Length: 508
Image (cartoon, rainbow, N blue to C red; front, side, top):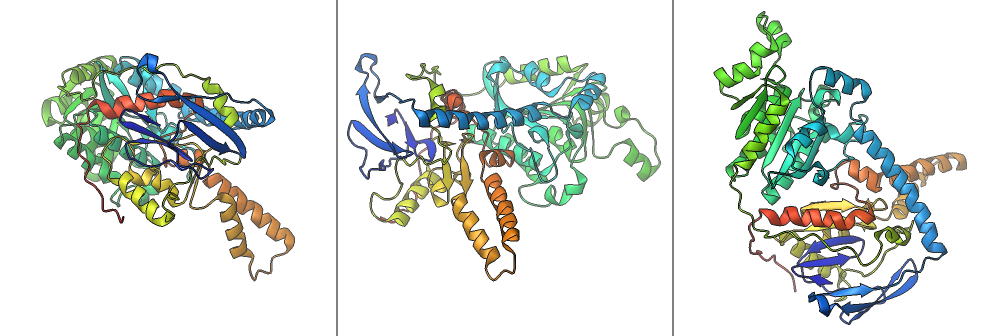
């Protein structure tokens, strides 16, 4: 189904781009007629496409009735289980560092992170947050929102990436997952040429995990590399220093194009007063060492002195208002209401995820070669790419359909999504066979081991596990998919200058 310059692919993924591919349906027919037949969970549907010529739309609209039978209601009940788990995880994420940490933060006359973001935005209800569930149930514990909040919103009408430390989570301490999220936000900013506002209050790296934070190419130093390169591409970088920026956290504001610092709260230094005293014997206050007055009048590391956070965010808004940005997306249109109730989608999602609408690569009979053609085309496409995993994302086909490896502009999952090298049942069977062959284990021990293997595979292939590890940009509920697509299209078309595709080598 082609709509303008965006082609929708429905399979295990919903993938938006302009790659020309044939649709092969599960009944082994290529989609070329006005009637579409397909099978979902062994139930056959016929959808008659109709042209809405009265509205002058250059595409067809499907007209279908959904039978709300026993299977539909079973699916709906299973979806409620997923929805409950999603709600529980959101509650953990939104709680931040907990009640005590929140009260301690507020006693220091500091705004909470979401209040800071609201002070920047024109309309906080339109804030498009990325990876809200990142950092939950990690090997080193829960790190709500990965200890950093990232997302896109409008400041004086201009779309901006906002990256803000969640300082109630261990004073904004940086964990490995924090870095991964920060780097992902910077990648989104670079792909879509979004000016970035960094709201900074960080205690630096979590030292027990320094080996996962400091030395590699895609760890701590990459944040600084990205700030420099974004600035060199005229993608403006702004920092608002609201609290302590210590050690590696000190480099983020200092490398930005414009820096605002809050008096008596904001500080920037590589080592704080205790370290100075231990190293030199000198006793100095944080304000004297790296406060707003010192940096604004002596070091030159900051540009704007703010008496309080309210003033700081007003200054931040004025800095964005002064940016000269070229918009290429043209006028943005709000989508029309869907023809059918999006809430009905929950009844079409099966527990076994068996949504096989078509199979990529069987058009020519040479599956490997067809996969390679599609993978090369997706890899080299310069148009915006948006991927939704709505069912199983298994093996190389996930790359063919725009996986994280293909660098789509955005990638989301429905709660029922499954991501893995093989189908979970196949992996469980293979692991059990490997572990139990020539084993002296009793039947009871084998049963216990199989249970542990099954739990591990099911957990690690779930959408929730993927979201916490930032293998996607978040979990989107089916009924919210349309809104999220609109937000993504606004972002990817705003400031990106159209480019010509450099074709990949394809073995014909």
